[in-house]
View 1 (cartoon, rainbow, N blue to C red):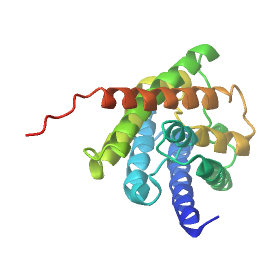
View 2: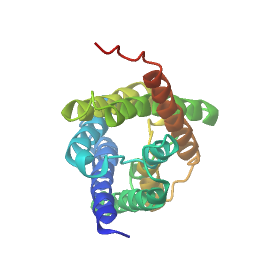
View 3: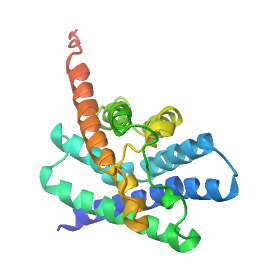
Length: 224
C-alpha cells in the first residue's frame, strides 16, 4: 500500500471512529441519562458528520461510509483498487469506536445499534430513500467545484440530521453500513442487520447516478 493511500485511509478511520463515538454514544448516553431525546440524537449525528467532513474532506474526500465509497466508484469518481482499503478501514474504525463505548458504559442499548421499529421491508425502503437523498447531496458538493468547502460540510451534516429526524423512528436512520456494523459486531445484536447494508448501498448508487444525470442534462453555456 502506498503511503498516500495509507494516510487517506487513516483520515477515514479517524472520521469514522469519532462518528461512531458521537452518534452511538448519543444514543447510549441519552438512554442512560434522559438528557435529550430523538432530536438531540439526530443533531449529534449530523454535527459529527459535519465536523469530520470539514476536518478530513481535503485529505480523504471524507466518505466516512462504505456505501458512499462504493457509489463514488460506481459513478467513476473513485478508483476501484482503493475501495477495499477504504471499506476495511471504515469498518475497523467503527468497531474500535463501539469497543471504546462498551468499555466506558457497558453493553447497554445495544451500543446504539440500528434496529427496525416496524416491518423489515418498510425499514429497507426507508434506508434506500434517505441514503439516496444523502448521496445526492454528497455527490453535488464533492464532485462539483461550484459547491465545496465549508458549505459542503454544512450540507452533508444537515442532510444526515434531517434524514434521522424523520426516518429515525422507523429504521434508525443509518445511511451508513459502517455506523451500523460497529455496534452490532461489539454488542452481538444482529437483528435484521442486512437492511443496513442493502438499503444504504442501493440508495447511495441511486443518489450518485441521479446527480450525474441532472448535472449532465444542464445546457452548455454559449461562448461569447
